[in-house]
Image 1 (cartoon, rainbow, N blue to C red):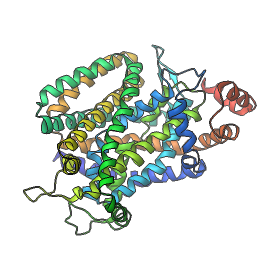
Image 2: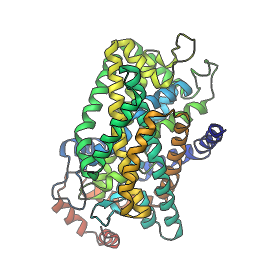
Image 3: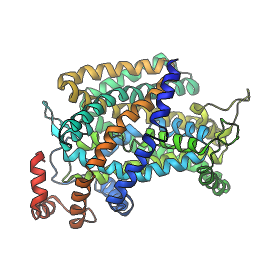
Image 4: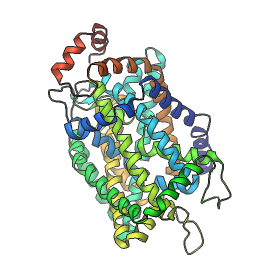
Length: 482
């Protein structure tokens, strides 16, 4: 009964009348207002993120721009990039991958906007650590009761989501894959994972950022390298695979439906839902990590943050999806004639092409992805706990969060995946409403900055100089203490 109730709620939230039009509509609207910024400025943004890495002379944050990016990537590159993609394609067909791309392209504008606001309205807590995100910018940017309500609603939903998308689903995937590949008991995995998580969390954001800065680039290169090898071996199948993606996006073909032709809405629904589960654009979560960055201007951190969606979906998710399609694993059946479960589908594709090493690549990749997601979401959750009950609740949250990791590793979680989708949606709704309301401020200040620094190469002194030439912008910053 609980599964049915949650399933119905999820279908409404992620159906054609709530989040799908709100997500895509907000992304399209922001894309227009920002002048297709996510495509026009992608190369300078990637350079700023991966080659410059930090703003010299920047103040006001706890970690570097690069560490902020890897923390956000840690939270997003998780089971959604492996299991989530397999789930979307097995139910929605190859066309679901197309809608993941659409969500990502327009989502980059949403990711830029929420990161911009995260820095724009950030502040420091009682311990001197920077705190920001939708839980703050919704209240501070939108005056009156509406802003307070949206900020509070987001904070509650984010704490709940941190135990779903950021904890139990990740731990369960780690334990399940280690058990299947290396026969490691789930209880052992859960105990070790909980202790490692608690050790890192006790150091706060600086500890998390140091781990993710060294961990995330390695894990992405490791997994993507294996996927590109399989795609290269099946080079002849690539044109047909892309053909399936584009044709099925508007017709719908489902392995679950026995190719009877599922409605196009399934491709859209599962593509968008799993797309946002993977890259979190529009959810507002990445703005929490962005707010902690040492940056000379909100526009610069917004640019860095939007590259996260590009890496997560356009690169990692595409690699997983193409592997599933070119190998035919997305509609493979087991010895019992039933469709291979989404949880093992990617593993099947890799091991079928590379042998046992392929299975190890997926398992190790998933373990690294999922563990990094746990760390990133722990930070998101504690910043929202700080917003709700003050700094005193942070340590209690960290210990409880680490304990729930063990529960996730040792418990069947059929219902939790649906709960995670619902919690993600409840986070996204207030954030997207806020982005629409604050879109004028975002566009105005972004255009002013890019007019003076179109290639994102200005140093702090130059930025201070051209900002001083705009009294209106300076006044708006002084009002928020930024």
